[in-house]
Image (tube, rainbow, N blue to C red; front, side):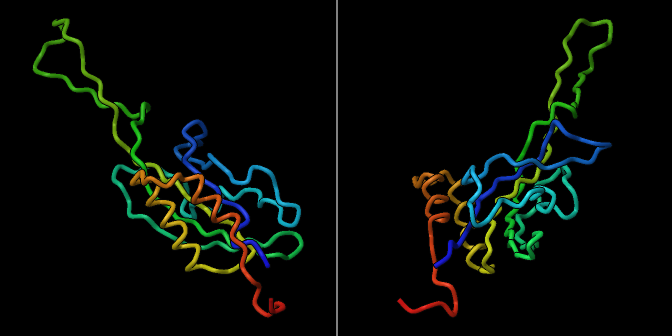
Length: 174
């Protein structure tokens, strides 16, 4: 028997670390928080969540799914299934000012509105098993629970995913 998923990770846009307009991702949440003895957490996973780079965009993008295969130093594969969606941010660094027909001599205050931008957020399942469709379905369910605020606690859904064990192909019959 093997765990279906070793880790669940939420990776988001890091507003504090921008280098020359290019953003970076950072791990917002990770379950479990400690490494499994038989499967250490792959470092740098936030680098693989956005192959085109971490960027803010002016319009919401469609959600996407892909699987990155990482190989560790022991030649073991880790399948990182990434479901990326876009969340709206009020970016305080990008301001629009609205000025009416008032003169500068008038003491009318200027209305400042924050510009709406969208940042990527990735839900990631890390596993040693290659079950792409199962991971797509699990991440879609987690996304739905998150967005629609369904009655099922998100922690319960993730806990069920991380405690699910499945038989290994070619293993002994029970």
